[in-house]
Picture (cartoon, rainbow, N blue to C red):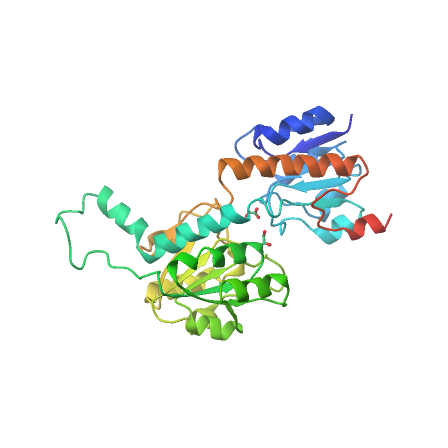
Length: 329
Ligand code: GLV
Ligand code: GLV
């Protein structure tokens, strides 16, 4: 039977599917395996089910001669050297689509929490600082309704975030690399307007970024971009930490130029306890939980299973990232 290694315990739904068709080995520890441990445990495996925190690079692939498919349990795959995989004839798959709405929900949780200071207010209550029943000037925040929402990167998630603004009667601005059906749809249905990045930064009250991490987007939002944002604006990131210059973000939050931020992703995950973000009141921090709903994580699990099973049958997996690998054969 074809052997696959799964780098962490994922929801049962996909494990069950894989066990019906494959010899499945699972990393049972709570702490992730190191690169060396992934290599050791994957020896002789034709399939690898990976997480976004696993470094799947050329060195690792070079040690695994039998590997035919890497099935990533995430939509983003910046942890995988796809080019190296393609050169070795290894198929790479991901889990797009299923987590779009779940991640858009979390993005909105952060928009609301950052705008209305929910994290800070929660800490205030728990600390016992709530001493006066009602404060005319206590914990005032920003209105969301009627504000201008700027979406950087109009992919599936960007669109789903934009769509959720409808009940808030917002003006929606967006940037994207190319016009397509999605841009036509949001312009028509949401009355959204495509603008250049600088206009979006200057005119939005709330900015949310939805781009994949690539060589072009690394450090995309830095000092210059934060300086261009309106004073008091809100910045949200549920994509990848490295698309933002975190030091510039901290400076902008500290100076009060940026009103608040809501972050699900960081330059280093888990966040180090000496990270200056932990000391700031005007930032809401959550630990990379964009897709973390029961239903979605379970669907992602069946998706990685289907991808790995079809690829090992010699068929085209539904969510292939590097289709050119099939033509090379
Ligand atoms: C989560 O960050 C994902 O890429 O699925
Ligand atoms: C993710 O599904 C995206 O393309 O935005």
